[in-house]
Length: 249
Image (cartoon, rainbow, N blue to C red):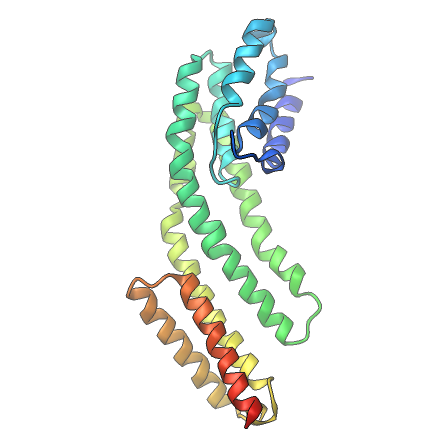
């Protein structure tokens, strides 16, 4: 296996680390599987060295799967440059916690919500392409982040984290959160205008007012430090109660 093919294989394997997730090593087994092609290099052809290599990479490891390739790329570069096993482990342990917090907040916390709300909005309009729209919003960003982080790690080794820092995920998290709530307001207004005869008689102007009120209340709640998840469930409960009231009257 030539080097380019090896690096490509490691990246592809890093996409499926969750497949071997377990409560003992978390993603450790999957990470070791991703690094396995590296044992074919000249540096790791000795059986003892190969055993030590697999042992240290199969230990407990857990981070956001979309930022994991950035760590994998840096680890490959460090291993190829002859870094000590303890240095590599320290690097992994130092980044897995912060990357988990950043990745979970952005990808699970807001990007998935943003994509889901758009998909729901299209579903309410009767479009059969709503699931594809979700994938269109959610998949390309995480693939680009995975690939960019991996390439940056291969190029800069220990300095690979600069790519993730340049993304400024906390700022993007806030932007997508506000965007998701704005689209949620439109979706709720669309749901009101399509649920029941009495609600369906509302004109477009009241619909816009309802959507605007929901958006402003959600924005105020975010400023007060209320979780976006609580706001989302609160909006859902409000819609259900609204439908029940108008359904019986």
